Length: 258
Image (tube, rainbow, N blue to C red; front, side):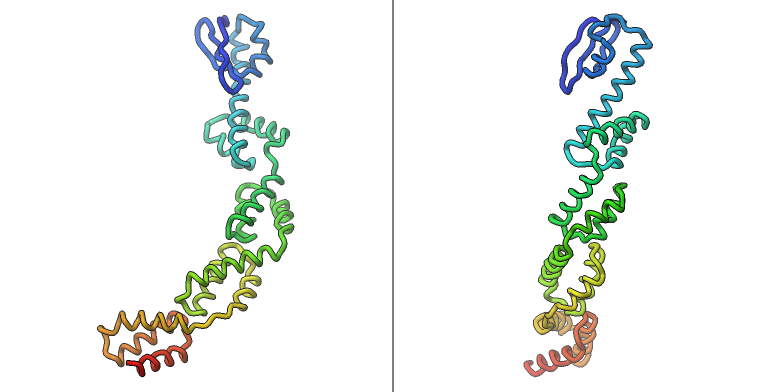
């Protein structure tokens, strides 16, 4: 094959026109194989050029993927495998990117933890689980999680609790605590810390009980006579976690006002 001309393209590539075809070749491959001096290409040299060119294609694609956002080795490999590149070439590219510092496990873990702590409601156990699923070293994850001041987790948890309480102001304290306990545990916070902070909640059920009573009363007042109506109201309020003594009091109070 005879080289007829070169045309410069973007991203360090050239279009090489041969007497029989055209190829897009990376500049590094051109220089490495002295193609600026060589005018006639044997089939053996062409195979070598194409193999090396594929490596640079994978390398540049991987580099672009990393530059948009920090990636783990596992993420990068999965991304390149989906492009149907050969695994041996992908492994060589990943090794080069690690040597060059583009793939840095410690840097990734530190950035990931900082983002989750500052920008999400997630607790340490969920953050750790996510990082392990990304194929990262558990010891390094623990090292960086242990650097987070315990008071930061406590402050985050208190903010979540206060926000959720405001969202559930029509619920009994019993139900609020039960719901919060499950939700906060699922967010990845320590069970002992959750229970400690929930124990400090001091909220009266008076307003929420009154609201729930009115809502249930209005719902059933036309369906049941007073005897069955009170029983229905009592049962509904009890299921919502309100104290039986308080329920009796609110029913009697409203009975007197009718």
